[in-house]
Amino acid sequence: MSGNKLLIATGVLAVLLGVTVLQFQARQSEDTRGPDLAVKLPKLKKDAIDELSVAAPDKKPVLLKKVDNTWKVAEPVSAAADQSAVDTALSKLEELEVIGVAATQAENHEKLDVVDGKAVRVIAKQAGKPVADLLIGSYRSGNTMVREPSSSQVATVKGSIKYAFEKDVKDWRDRAIVDTTSEQVNSITFENANGSFHFVKEGSDWKQAPGDKPLPNFDGTKVVSLVGTATSVRANDFAAPDVTPDSAGVGAKADGVVILTTSADAGEQQILLRVGHKIGDGYYLTREGKEPIYVVSQFAGERLLSGPDKFVKEEPKSDKPPAQAGLTGAKKAH
Image: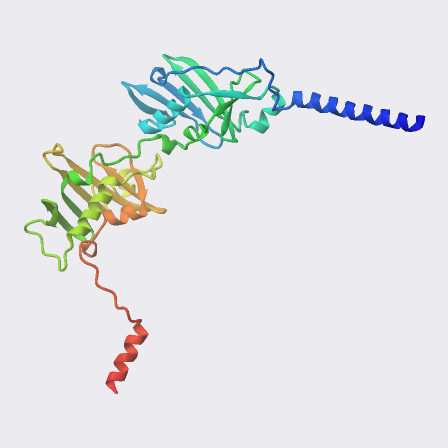
């Protein structure tokens, strides 16, 4: 009997020892949250921030600056910024809401992606002075891991924020090309290897311009669609720094030209687009008065180089397969 009691006591002791070890390990784990433990991140006002640097893994670092209340890309290129993209990023900084502590030990930083090489590092400045320096890490259970480089504590921040900063350079740049709507356009001209075609809007209908050679089966709704393409085209990318207008086919002898004019109600203006050579699965394109050489989609490029077939009604297709039609003809011949 005494032997059994000894075995039982030994077992209980082993269990208690195991529980103690597990509790100790839990205190060292990334999930530890003491009742008085909290992480504080800077409270920011997006309108006060005038400089933002973003360094994401496997992407070129980007420096953005606010000049005369307009955001610009300062590095690695000098270009107009996508104001919406910057505004989204600044809103995420202003709305940072810490809802917990994800870790307190340095050994847990890497698994939460809040270390150099894994995190997106964001530095916000106001009047030249840093007001925030953050390492934005992994997204877990609907929240984001964030750490200040000088701190070992990792904050759990409410919601998804990493996407607003983890961008290629091109995604920080202004990719809008035409700043008018299709409804505001009252004439459009296409000039390319297929010829010169000029169309005007009368009321809500599109017609060939007076003096142009009539196109058989002309369809004004086709022009409506092409005007929509011209006014909504956006850059997918930008030409490499060593690409010149002439080498891209958008110089004085462009592959194609599209000219849009807007109505007086919209403020009369002429928008001249030059369509250039094919590049990969896109086309080079410029807008007169803007510096960048854009790269637009193949779909947009081909439509902006439209020829006569794009302005006329499509021929109705026969329901009969070619082989069947030939067989019918052969039977009639007999």
